[in-house]
Length: 411
Ligand SMILES: Cc1cc2nc3c(=O)[nH]c(=O)nc-3n(C[C@H](O)[C@H](O)[C@H](O)COP(=O)(O)OP(=O)(O)OC[C@H]3O[C@@H](n4cnc5c(N)ncnc54)[C@H](O)[C@@H]3O)c2cc1C
Picture 1: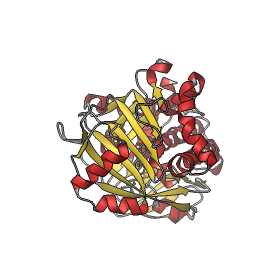
Picture 2: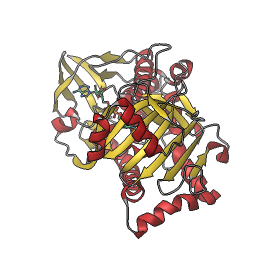
Picture 3: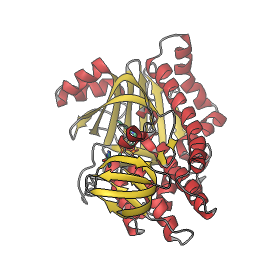
Picture 4: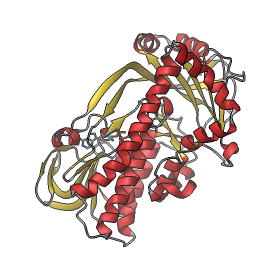
């Protein structure tokens, strides 16, 4: 049976980032670590010159720093498919898109060239997996089936055989089989919304800007893409989302023009629509003896703040740092004491972020009472305070909270 120190289940962006960080740290000679990454579905990277995928994510500057530390950034930068965004314009349907009720976060206000990047999920994933294998990590295109936790390690059964490790990292997404096999619980609640994503052409240029409009029945974001088109994420209440998904391309574009208040002019769909039912998921415990959960396996948040991958990448950085610290102290990386330090660090940060995202959703996208009306008008007030704007810009850059060392380069 093959023996490893760390087996990471799930080579999505978060698992692949943890794998690449660990493989590179181990390769630097500080400590020897044998790392295996289990991922049955590795897509090819986007082909040169091909149109952008419908699934994109906004990544923060802190995530960029992590991707540099993981060795994945050169491939992302060289492909010229990541679009830096320089500002965000956020407004409520009660005000016009060009009025002073619009909240504008501009990277220039804090002396930064941009706030982050819009990047295809597939590019993120494939660049990280390539960085992992280049650093000497072993990719196993197998599906995890079950595990047995023993005193000094974990036995893992996969679709391609058995292996053992001192630690198993569950990075296998919201439906995590590792979480279920370990008996770790997950609290799940529905938002009663579905996110519709698609690529659209717009009459006016996106101006390297992320545009977001809060409405009484959802939130609509336009994220700028490298080829001049924009990716929309429309998180709509379920009845509206069902209508939007079933409508013709022309009818959908008309609804989009109405919902965006023509902030970027008339729109035209240039690809297929995809729908994602939205749920919030929280695992009350991220760790057990010899098991740790990271990314969507541990927590799923509403996409309106574009934070899911960013939070997961920080989990990967924090876990890698705790594990390398344990190895340097000659401690067992699978011991509960080591894993609890990771859990304490990340759980509190995620609880704060998830609660603020839900408050934004309740007040800005759905609220109708006096407090909600105050919050909706508050966007314009925040815009008039340089201090408050800087506070939120730092959050958008991802440089607030306790960062792993690997994410510190831009802080
Ligand atoms: C509409 C929408 C828009 C979003 N926009 C943003 C955004 O702008 N910014 C942002 O930060 N986040 C965003 N998110 C969230 C983001 O997509 C997720 O947080 C992110 O994909 C989680 O990454 P992950 O690696 O933890 O999980 P996943 O991406 O789900 O990856 C899990 C991996 O595990 C593998 N796997 C599953 N089961 C097994 C098994 N049994 N054995 C082996 N492997 C297995 C899967 O094949 C997959 O590759 C958005 C989400 C949605 C729905």
